[in-house]
Image 1 (spheres, protein in one colour):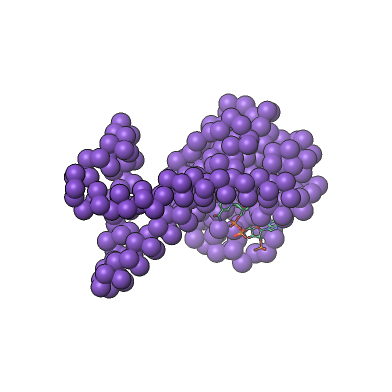
Image 2 (cartoon, rainbow, N blue to C red; image 1 turned 135 degrees about the vertical axis):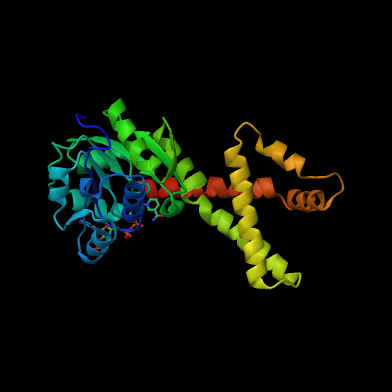
Length: 273
Ligand SMILES: NC(=O)c1ccc[n+]([C@@H]2O[C@H](COP(=O)([O-])OP(=O)(O)OC[C@H]3O[C@@H](n4cnc5c(N)ncnc54)[C@H](OP(=O)(O)O)[C@@H]3O)[C@@H](O)[C@H]2O)c1
């Protein structure tokens, strides 16, 4: 890559939810919207994003490959082959797929081995710039390509590299799918509060803010173990201890492990299909 990341043009093929979230993050972080180009099959979402962000738009995917240094492949996995068919990637430095479950080998095949491929697995909190993205670099990826991916996903949250593609299914289980586990846990806490006689809005406000507060405490103090935090707030024989004992008796650890194993298993099945 001969230009700096700030000066580089970032392209998107597919203008859906994930592409929109990442483009918003980049613009918010100060990336020049004129250095973002996005294509889509239909024009409605493109026009809305152009109005909102001032990015360049096209309904021709090749325009993106012609203009961009880094191209995000952001169509649905089942649409990828068609979206990439016949495209010339020779002037693109690297392509980053956000497609869930689509292996690097397929992406190399769909791009006719013309470009270095990075596989990413972002999650929906990226929309609020609180995303968690797992990244995997294929063999032809160079350090400058990795920095480009970090620039893109750093704009919408945190990222982590895995060095074994098989672990992308674990990324899906721990990041891609996990917001839904936390949503479910919040739902159950709110329902339990309502059963105790509290109104829904109050229960929701208390539970959501507690979830945010707990995550913020952990994130802002990485030197303190999560278990230490838990022990700090658990007085012997107190209310928290009673609740935690109940969760352990109900098998919380077994449930979480089974949930992660189920997501990994399903991810592998989907990748193979
Ligand atoms: N959303 C998530 O939480 C999430 C999380 C991790 C990964 N992902 C991955 O992100 C990718 C996109 O997901 P999404 O939720 O953003 O989907 P989406 O909202 O459905 O967006 C996909 C977009 O691709 C466009 N498209 C389809 N075929 C095309 C083609 N041949 N050329 C150009 N554009 C084309 C569609 O255009 P039309 O509107 O005209 O059909 C649509 O706007 C998926 O591969 C998914 O696995 C999503």
